[in-house]
Image 1 (cartoon, rainbow, N blue to C red):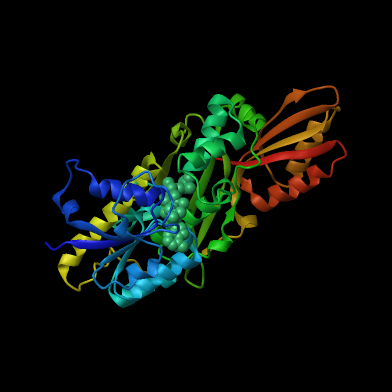
Image 2 (image 1 turned 120 degrees about the horizontal axis):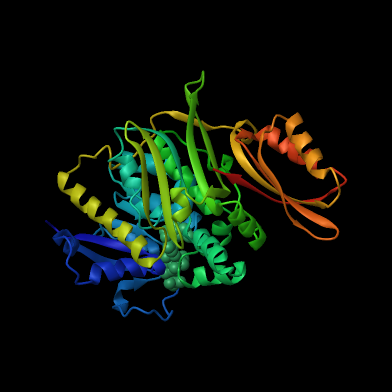
Length: 432
Ligand code: NAP
Ligand code: HSE
């Protein structure tokens, strides 16, 4: 088999991990030896790097790689959106297959990118874009294709799971732990994407398109992050038998009269019973539960971020491309991807969920009754309501609802907020 020459755009956490795998002597499949790094694009040619490499390999112009006819595959591990999108599309148009770890680009421009790849007879592979080292993209495209996916729910951001685990187990400080996650290479360049739930929303958008076959409008996904979670919520959740995790969920609904499949998709911090398999997922690990017919339920689990695991996913994509290139001009319809139906996201007010609410109020007689009445009047059934902390002038009331309509719940919340006895609704989380 002839060599496969790759150009890598980006030599940070992921890019340097790819280099380490391709230059390591560990016992692995012989096809790995056929991959040759032709060029690497970086931003700053003078930056001190931990890895010693031939400086002739480096350039600060990514388009040199794209326009080099001897390079077969472009590996985009640079991050960002606009330039990365141009690099990907430009490469595909020049007949080069692309491997990317960039969920922000695929979640926003997947349709254009998948179509361009198909038109040009090349591939775009993105295993590393979701759940780092866990194989999830290719299984959804290939191994699970004989199933009808019903629901996916999981922890798909490593940084936030790392932070929440440390806050839960060690009462660690939120800001300090975020800094630690950044120094370990888990967080995005701008960690707002991680902590505000945008990264998880990008990932569940990509997974939903692959699982359900229709384009998802990324902006319509309702997402909330963990930046407002404090140690008190974690302590109360623990007392009530729950862990707090940032969950992403995507679930099949009905097909409407326009032949479009309704999907319930959201991202948010959630209470999970300690006995639930997702509650055991700690640190930078991710896990995704997939419910499918006729398969039943499976859980994919492993490291969701970090240099080695993410780079391993990228290199596997490169190997798949190299193996596919042997077939000469025939595109494998499962390794490529195209939409086969329309999907739409169900409005937030129409979905049903369990909820957790922490209310700070005056410790006055009858307040729990008033809160209960408001929920009852709005059709919101309560699973439990407890007063967990009372001092001289205030009490903290925690409510967990049954699965109820989100519109009814939001209306109740507004009415509770306007009670004279209520000082503030301190937090609102989902529950599963
Ligand atoms: P990173 O450590 O910040 O590395 C980014 C690299 O891109 C650096 O080498 C930088 O060059 C280079 N770069 C930036 N702008 C450039 C430009 N204009 N031209 C050429 N090179 C440029 O990022 P990372 O953590 O490896 O993440 C890369 C991608 O992988 C992102 O899309 C991220 O979302 C995704 N991802 C990351 C992880 C993870 O665990 N880190 C996991 C899954 C997916 P310099 O070295 O000169 O600064
Ligand atoms: N910042 C991302 C995370 C990297 O923490 O999950 C992996 O996609």
